[in-house]
Image 1 (cartoon, helix red, strand yellow):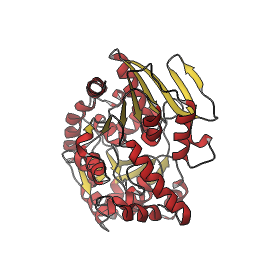
Image 2: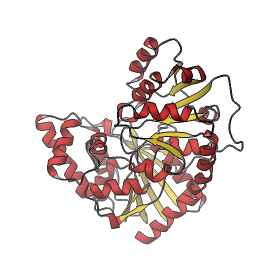
Image 3: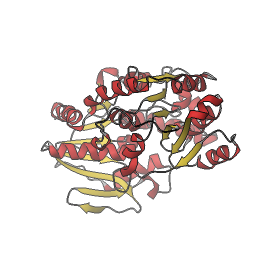
Image 4: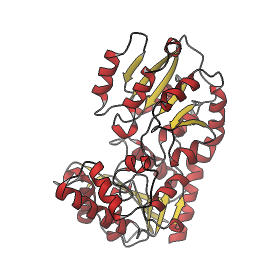
Length: 391
């Protein structure tokens, strides 16, 4: 079997969640004797570069003077062949999916692990309770996402065009039942969607049952410092905790992004007893970060397709406190403490309750039991079965 794997992110150039997952899938497919070539849309110019015998760098969406979601599709249309020599094309991280469907002659398997061609404003969509999609709703969400005037109308048209093309993939996968529900609310036929989960990086597995207790225990946040990941909301929730918790807990925020300056100002103006640190750790050093943590605070403000931090925490025996959404309910309902992020005061109340507990390691052990189903060999066997079906 020959597979063309098309993605917008891939290490070492991209070490975000989609890039790491892409490499884990490709490496495991090759271990299972599936010939896999990688086509990555992360180039800085408008030409194709051959990185190795089985990896090609195509222009990124930013290489074109148009919005990135359009640029990715232009890159596919202008620089990607019809891939006729392959048995199946796997489109991952699917901003580029409409063009892949239009361009590729073999069957297309699409993993929808973001909200492009699903919902224009996933935060407001979640806040509204994930209502069924309709033109008026899409137009409103284009407004809440910052589009106005002719750009707003254009974004609605682009959404419907891209979504109609995305639905034409030969097979669609999502990473949990919650995202399957989200797609169905946004107009995708539920019986065409398969659930194949995200996969854990084995380097995060630890053999011990937890870390030794320090004088202060450590709560961590890991992720991009952008609004929909909720780092500022997480920091504010920690600041507002009672003093007895501040005497025993510190909060380390790991990440980079536009909200870093806001977090730094919050740290500077917080009371002396509030111990918050803003840090950054390269991906290879993250296992040590999890091993030194006593709990993970995941404050996402939209339906995460399937956060890698959940898997990394479970593999590391790190308890999880997480915002409630369809994905976290589907994946973490038995292993994490969930809270309603839109209920004022509940994030702080939940955090205070959990950080006062003495049973955090019980949650960690439940997470470690669950993590086995997300090993690369298990997940990629499901992909291979799906490839064979569409072929």
